[in-house]
Image 1 (cartoon, rainbow, N blue to C red):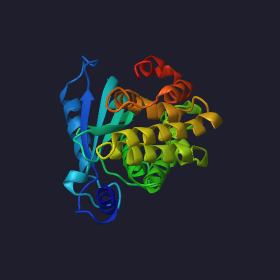
Image 2 (cartoon, rainbow, N blue to C red):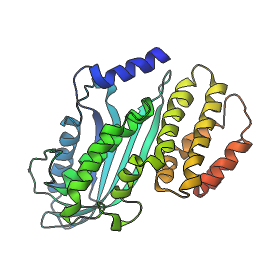
Image 3 (tube, one colour):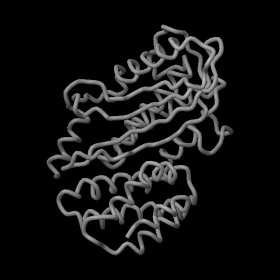
Length: 294
């Protein structure tokens, strides 16, 4: 297994050249009934090309190492090239020794407003804010890469989070929601500032331990891997003790709640009483799911 992990880390720096993301982009415009649907179809294609053909980092990826993700824009209003939408962002990473992909991110950004003219070029410039559409997509592309890197190496995602934060800073003067502190405590502003805060270092360490010492060891020793998974979840308790009901805790369990239940609902039995107590304490909104852990 450690040879596998070492190879993955090597990919971060020396893999075959290629883009980082394998992203399925969808534009849902069912709520819009008084506009030519071609504009939305063109937008969908432009976004797909932009996300999948942009080099977001200096890392080189082989095609098989690209990060699987999804971006679903749901258009809620459209007039004169101005769009209002929500954006569902999801990503996953492979688990060693299996065909299973573990969800890493599952977040719904409800404040994605932008202007787009049919046929315009979408270009990523990390040093300027030229379009809120480009800024939002660029932000989440870097967050996805950062989370993926954190799941394979301790603090592996820092450079990519910093690129996302830089985009957030550039966008703050654009007049769009989601980039500023006053836009709510579950905005892009708080997402990236929390991830990079030293207060949430145990959250990032738990993300790493959960995948490397937990999921990636399931094919070697399932009982031991479950115990390591419990230890990682207990690590999240450190965050809860200083920042109860934090945004990042919601981010973690919006992606992981069902997976956690599945991990502890089959295979070799271990004592889960303390685990369930911890889960109910740090993620009470998922209490009905934790009741299924046996």
